[in-house]
Length: 111
Image 1 (cartoon, rainbow, N blue to C red):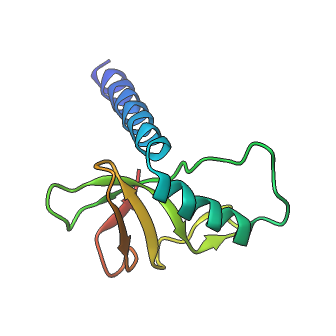
Image 2 (cartoon, rainbow, N blue to C red):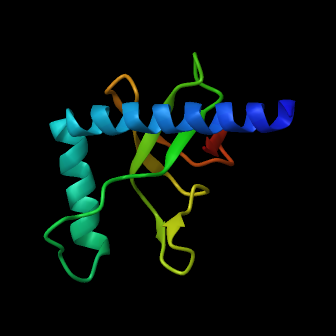
């Protein structure tokens, strides 16, 4: 039973982290601007209700191992996800926007 509890606790923790990151995104005009530019460049058709960023990452080699949302980078259409081997722009939970050279050059993991 301990494994089920640990797994459930991890799921709840990730959900709380993503909710916090979503609030940070909603409060950041510059992050929304970068995201909207990404959407205009990547999507063939505009939507009335554009998607919000959902890919959370942890930067392991930075002080405090911050977490953030990927708001721009290389979108792999075939996989329907970010190619984190490439450089990416990330909104950190602190509200700061940073870039990363990619997961091979910097310890980066999708959560």
